[in-house]
Length: 396
View 1: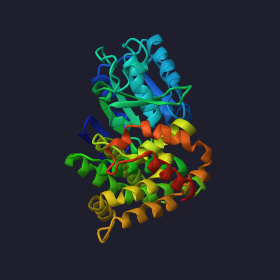
View 2: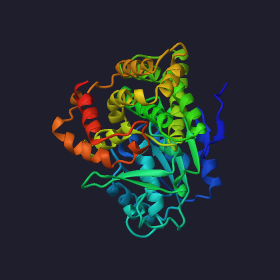
View 3: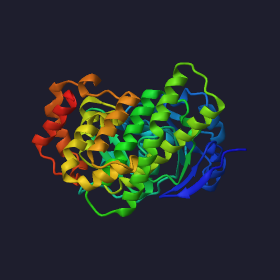
C-alpha cells in the first residue's frame, strides 16, 4: 500500500509524504504557471532524481542551478536575469536553504526596481514591496533551515560577506511539497549539520523573550521529533555511504526518520517567528567572517550559548529537558543531551577543529554584536560575553 500524503496549511499549504513531488504538475496548474523557472544548486542538479523533477515541472525554461554554498547577491542577479530572459512566470525552488532563499530573492526582484538590498528588512528607507511577486513552489531537499515555510531570504554581499535579510509576506511560497524520499541520499555530515540547524531554531525560539504560546508548543514538539529521528538519520546515512544495504524494515525506518526531521525543520522555521537568540548571532558572524556553513556554526556554538543562558531561564530549560527525557530533573540534563547528540552524529567539538582561527575573534564579536538575533536572548549579551562565548567554543 502506498504511503499517504498529508496536506496541512501552517502557514502555507504543505503536501507532506513520500512521493509528494508527484503533485508538482497539479500544483503548478493550480497556481496558473505556464513557464516556471526551476531554481536549484549545482550539486542537486547532478542527482539522479533531479531529471525526474524537471520532467514533472514540464516547463519550456531552462533550470537555473547557479546556487552554491551560502547564498550571495551575484547568484540572485544571475537568477533574475534568467527569469526575465526566459519570460518565466513563477518559480519552483528545489533544494536546501540556499536555493530557497535565492529563489525568494529572484521572485522579489523579478518585477521590482533597484537593488536587492534596497529592500533590506529594518532599513528606515527600505523600498516598499508593492509590485507583483510571482508564485513560488518549494521542494525542500534538506531538513535544516525550514526556509520553505518562511517569509524572508538571507542573502550575503559577495565582497563583504555581510548578511542582509529581506522580508515580505509575499515571499512565502504558496505551496510546499515536502517529500522525504528526496532526503534519503543526503550524506551523513550534511544530515548532521542541517539537523543541528533545525534543533537550534527550535530551542532558541522556545527560549526567546516574548509571549508566543503557539510558537512555544510547536518548538517543543519539533524538539521531540529531532530527539527521536536525527541520530537515526545520520546512522542510516553512514551505512549507505559505507555501501551497506538496508533491509526493507530499515528502509521504512529511514524514510520515517527523514520525514520526522523534515517536519521538525519546518516547525523550527515556523517557531522562530517568535525570535531567536545568541547562538544565531554567533553563527551568523561565523558565516560572515569565515564563510562557515550556517548549520555547522550553530552546532558548534550551541553548547556554549546554552550554558550562558541556563541561569536566566531554568524553568524553560527544565521543560526542554523533560521534552526529550521525561524523568529529567534539571536544565543541565538538556545541556548534557546536546553534547551527547553532537558526539553521536559527528559534529566537531570546537571552532579550532573546524579550522577557524582565533585571530578572527575581534571580527566575529564585532559582527555578532550587530546581529539582531541576540536582542531577544533570555540573557542580555555584552561584548565581553561574546568574547567569552567564542573563547569557550574555540577551546571546549
